[in-house]
Length: 128
Image (cartoon, rainbow, N blue to C red; front, side):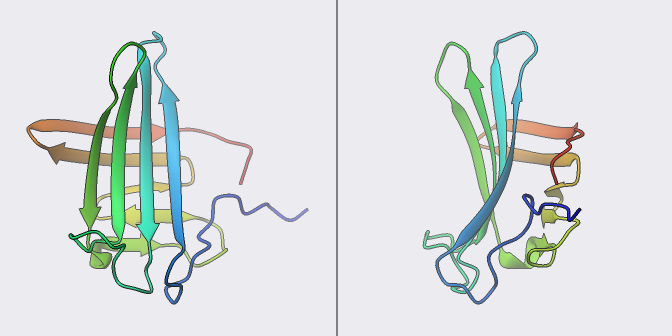
């Protein structure tokens, strides 16, 4: 049986509009909220994703408290820091600088506006 390619790179460097993103959502065991870690690659064929910083790779860490306002840490990176697995192949990986998501591991760290967050999460899934 062929393994499904649910976690794979679909956009190519020649495409001007498409983007790919991968994320991991983690609910806290105490019910206080959830973290969402997102790795985003946009408009590689243009060399930028349209924002003034012109950085096509982003790493997001967003805290969704059960009672309160969400708090997002979002950082853009230049294309030179991006490493992607081959299009539509396994094993999948997306690495942006020293952050990344790949087979069973999600890691990163962000320091923005006087705040710092870091994560290294491991999981096991039956989905490819």
